[in-house]
Amino acid sequence: MQNLKARFKRCDPRFFIYLEEVFDRLPTEVKKDIIDNEGFQIIADEAFHEACVLRHRFDTSVQTFVYLNTKLLKESEHRIILTIAYEIAMVKAGEIKEVEVEKEAEDLLLKWGFEKELETVRYYRIIANSEGYKIGYEWAIRQDKDYLMQHFGLYFDEWNKMGWSKKPDGAMEILDRQADKASVLKDLSQFIDLKAGIPDTEAGEVIPSQRRAIIAGIMTAVKEIELREQYRAQKCEMRI
Image 1 (cartoon, rainbow, N blue to C red):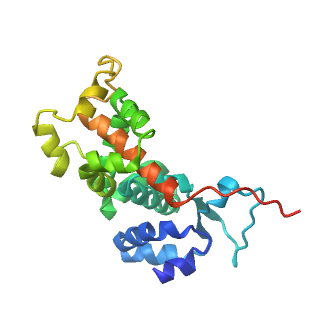
Image 2 (tube, rainbow, N blue to C red):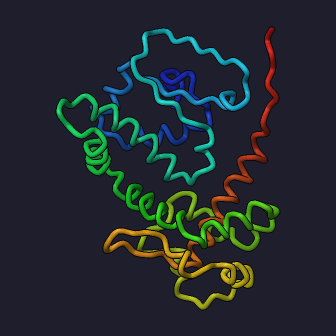
């Protein structure tokens, strides 16, 4: 990790655990190319949201830099990892002439072993467009984090690290197999317009259960509340 910190000096330190995982999974030659290419930089700074003026100085000329908005930290870990890997794939795809860069980047991600993350993020997009997800998030963002963790903490670590795929396992598999006994889920489900609650999907796509969508919204809110507690916004400081 020290090498990455020295290489990407202007990156928020909270991202380095994810950078390290991505680089550990890249092919050796790709990892070396990115590290050696000092014209490529990754920038992330909480001050982008608050500072009136922000200045960074680089030791060498930079042709391409990726700005990671620190709001990304509110997302699940697998989503952060895929975002970083995708930006690196876009850099490598851009080196190949006469290709569709986005498609080539996706092909590279599959080749590098990020298939599970790709599938999970695609499935998450379907969930995030559902009525159940919105209701779960809007309810949970107003609740106390300890209360949420007491009732839904069973699902948080699984959602945060791996996300949920079309074929559930772990805690979500148990939830899908059991009758809905959670009073909160029952209450929230009553607010869902079933017709409006079905997101647009492509042919063959699996539509998630409303219970799973509600919990996904709740998990997103928990991550956001957790991040707020750890890092309070700072006031803008004028220098002149």
